[in-house]
Length: 400
Ligand SMILES: *Cc1c(COP(=O)(O)O)cnc(C)c1O
Image (cartoon, rainbow, N blue to C red; front, top):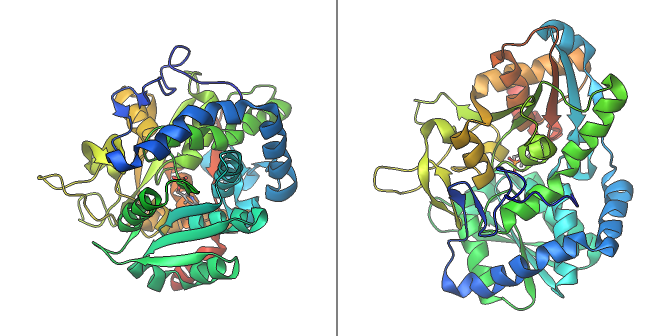
């Protein structure tokens, strides 16, 4: 994470204007400019400060439970005729990779002298990860969540409340994630001085995508060391991860972006099928446009209205992808696969029966993408198992 991946060194790092190729930037209302500018001016200095690094690393070790294991999935490997390793982000505190980012951002907020945190959440996973670190640090926490999502995701709403957060219903638009994001940004505009906005993925205006990618880059930093210890090489043939906004994928890809022999595979949610009208397959269906402050690829109607996405997995139910991923798609560096609900559920059951690990529905999309790759018995593959499936049992139980 200390290694600055900038465009003078890497065609896949962010440039000094905040762009990845033709994607990224900070397309924000003028009212938001002071907050975003304060963050942009300070984030790299703060992150690279040795005292910050020490505190962040200690929390990752003692609170989050890092390093997470890299597990050789022998029975899955046998079935797929390749060597498959699982990066066990499901074993992180709170059950997924999201906490890697919220721990980093809460420390940034403290260094900037902020007293309050605002966040958006869809299914509630990022809201829980944010409320968790706010409890840890004793900061006030306000989480915006679509009114419909509050109905659908009661256990996470209760977790956030138990952790001391105020959950505010977003009642505008379709009352889901994109509306919660809009309202959280509005809240930040109205509370610029004492509040930090913790975005949950590699999305939003610069510097958020880069900052979140750096915090998640601990995933590939560990994979390199662990894979070297197990195989004598840091580099697998493939790294595979699911993409909602793209933070676990950004973290899993980060230290491999400039290793052309490592193929980077992103699994997006096709929902009921790409042409079903119920999908979240952003690269398959989307076009360039501006979403939540950055230029990226997003699903939209002819006249530019954001399309409501659909996926069985709440974490992949987002109409865009982060600008880094838009650039990986655009440049051909990333291989994008669209995975249906049905194929994801099937892969979730297969992993559970083969390895005794119940994956999150999101992670199951990455597992299903393995079947779309031309694997041979020489191939070494790392799959980012972004989260655990406990939260998805109500969905899985319909298939028992
Ligand atoms: C939120 C979530 C995702 C999707 O978010 P990214 O930013 O794309 O990583 C994936 N998996 C799990 C388990 C999640 O909770």
